[in-house]
Amino acid sequence: METHMQNENYTNVNIFKNAFEHPTPKALDGGKSDKTYYGPVMEHASGFNPYVNNQGTTLAIAGQDFVMVAADTRISSGFNILSREHSRTTKLTEKCVITSSGMVADIENLHKLLIAKVKTYERQFKKSPSTESLAQLLGNTLYSRRFMPFYAFNLLCGLDAKGQGCVYGYDAIGSYDKLTYGVQGSGSQLGAPILDNQFVGHNFLVKQLAQSLQETEDTAKDIINSIAERDIYTGDQVELVLVDQNGVHIKREPIRRD
Amino acid sequence: MEKIVSVKEPTMHTQVPVNIGTSVFGLRYKDGIMLAADTAVSYGSMKKSKKSTRMASLSDEAAIACSGEMADFQELQKILKEKREGDEIENDGATFLKPRDYFNYPSRLNYQRRMKMDPLWNGSIVGGVRKDTGETFLGMVDLYGTKVEGNFLITGLGAHYCQVLMQNAWRPDLSEEEARRLIEDCMRVMFYRDKKATDEIQITKITQAGGVEVEKSYRIGSEWKLEFFKNMTNEFWRPIRIYQ
Image (tube, rainbow over all chains, first blue to last red; front, side, top):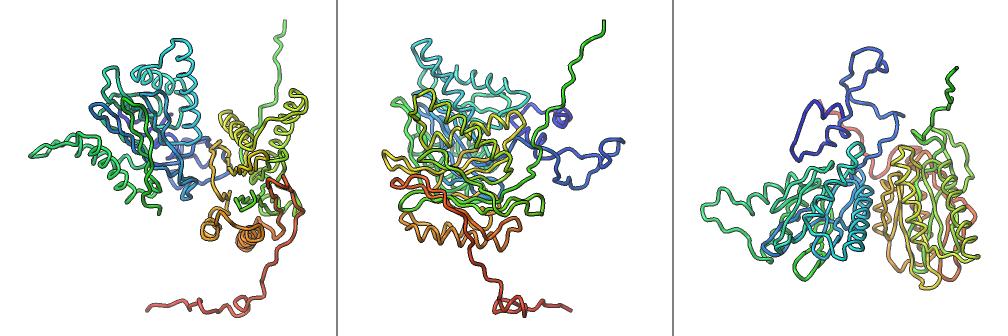
């Protein structure tokens, strides 16, 4: 906590990089003096770290009347591959899915919690919650665990009240923003600039952006494939989830497995 | 009046595993599921016990094998037994838990304990075959509550050494003998390379016909009388080059 107080950051940056992945320098004398030790921190019988990153990439692109989600299906533990066919995406309503990257155990818990909340809502109000409501709900759910966060980086994707595609991007503690496209996980740094290029096209002389479903799907697949080329934690399969007027459609395609 | 202050011992949590069982294996084969573990329990670098059982049947169609802290394994066994007995009493002797439930339960338990910062320090593999449908199940759960399903699963150091061995040799139509030989090959590699492993292994078979069979442990052969150990030379050995 202390570390990210020092580098105050309001952007969508992985706070765990500061809080958990880089342990703070430890005093060699057990904290008796103010001296800190900046050498390699020894892994010793020093307790239990409840967080682990299972890596993987997920991205979503909003279209005029659809949302396309593309995620890889690999989960890792260190350099080991735990599974080659793990689904990152969960259907919440007929018009909304959530897709996450981070710690698999936390993500599953979060998704189950949201499903339960959606069911409660449906019983109570005899209708499904809107995507906007779910976006706020997810933000509140994540923030409710502010002091032991869900290690989950989410994209909430669905159709809004007008039937337009929308993507909500989150950090682990519940800050969120409405986007037209988003990417989370170990390949987010590799994927973000490609998405910027393909779906904003700032420096195009002739601006022709992907509009149709087919173009969007192909681009999404290409981006996951490109990430899999360079990110060792991304690969095996790409799971494509389409949300449109007719509901949620899922399909998978193999990509590189090394 | 004097204040009454309740004196309580500080709560102690597992900070680090102490009595450790090393890797466990699980694989699907033609007739069902095979789980395997060796029988050693280590205390640091010392083998505390060379004849321990690290697996248990959970019902007549599911079994579990555990690596990691053995005290936590025994705790888990106790919890599952109490759960099962409670269910039996509630339901007049009938049980409705299927192999998958015996997997989901420890996974939720492990997640709950992780949230308490008091983990059950185990990597567990749960296998099962449903008697009614013959459907097989094989899953692995770690101390965070991560659930993984697969055709062959390995925990601990075995995942580093034997993953490829398994990947190359595994087929869905492995016979019992072939599955056993594959397990033994993996266990032999572990015996050669993992200081916490022994050459005495135990196998649990789960089949639709036979239910859960926790076999007796037995020793696998190992070969140490190799020329290489005497001469330190073989066809792959190269002298260290010294550059000027």
